[in-house]
Image (cartoon, rainbow over all chains, first blue to last red; front, side, top):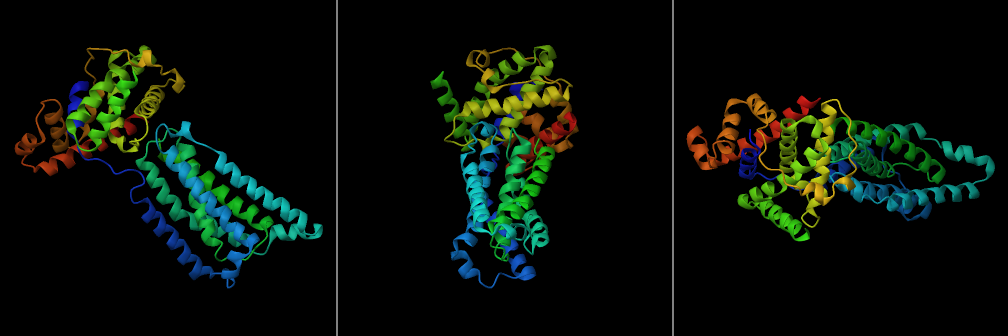
Length: 210
Length: 181
């Protein structure tokens, strides 16, 4: 087939795909709503949720997870474009990491030395490490499907951003249940759960986003 | 040069808005540039294979045009797609290629290469489509029929022809990917 003939045929195809963000808010909203409902039904919301959101140390968990959700989502939408990898800015991500690090340092200095291992370990580590990845499945799938319609130049990085944003959103919904208020706990275990999901999504991205 | 690229953005914008003439003009303008890049990188592959890659790039540009943001410049977007497809094509042929994007300087890219040889891959891929889809692509592309004429010929409504054409391109891209693996 001559290239000019191909061009004529391509020009005749007027069916245009909608932009990548089309329907994203709705789908992601539904996925996160499903997470919230699961957390409420399976685990139950923490009874002191109202006051927990207002206590700085406990609220920081929502700030960190929702911050990572927003930053990860934004980075994913940039890297979903062919030229996006060159436009990525890592400063917001670094800022959140620094904030998490600062919370850990602050907790280390205020927790009595003998209490640090206990504060890190908490009582619900296994639940946390199980539930956050499970809750991530739906939002991460929604985001990977968006990336399928995109044209990333960096499949693994794009997958990782989908994993980060999706698992951070899931972690924020898990936090509606979780009563472990020490940064030593949530930075460690939320962080580990999200890292696992991010790596898995990067691997999937490398395979399905070529 | 800058004027030229504004022109691209304008044409592509109009094309995305449904102006088939502007869109065709856009594709015809960028094709020599894509061909220049591909031939420059893939000289060792021969002209026919290069043209196969050019067509692959055009198909990707077409199917992924919704990833171009109207406020963003066209050139980095187009070059990134071209680079990705060239790298894929080389990988499929068992060669590795490093293509830093800075290398796509204008004098390379804008060097128009005329008289392309006929490419073979696309025809083979079209042969793998179901009969009706293949017929739609052939009539509109090779015979230069309009959507309406094609519809009359194949006893399809215009809308059905449009959908069939779009699906055919998506299918071609998918076949291409599988073929490359």
